[in-house]
Length: 138
Image (cartoon, rainbow, N blue to C red; front, top):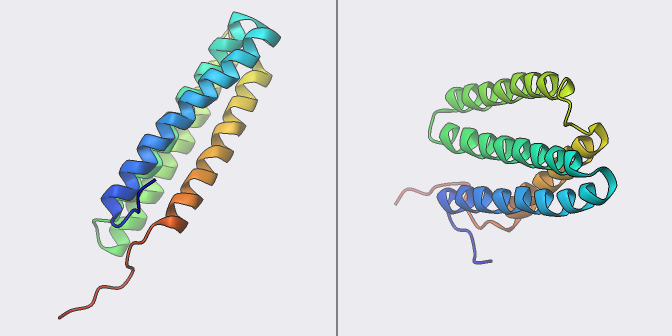
């Protein structure tokens, strides 16, 4: 992985690796679920991976957009994104709860793996980024 030296590189990398994380959850989770729960388990793992990709993307995009605004705008965009994700998650779970093809434990573990993976991904990328936090005026 090359050095990340600006916020555009950071958020581009977060989106790319978030996609790879969702793909890994879909493949690994789907493979395990196929042997434990059949085709419905695969669909459940795919639903968990899709939700993970959506939420990772929304987080990265809201912070990226908010970073271009003054501090009040930043918090507004990030909190607005958080509320959209929270409400969207509630609706998604309500919809998936009644779906006959959902295997609850598979969906749960796919979501947990996705959340933990995205937290780890964000932490590692931000810690490795070499982005200055203070601008000097010449």
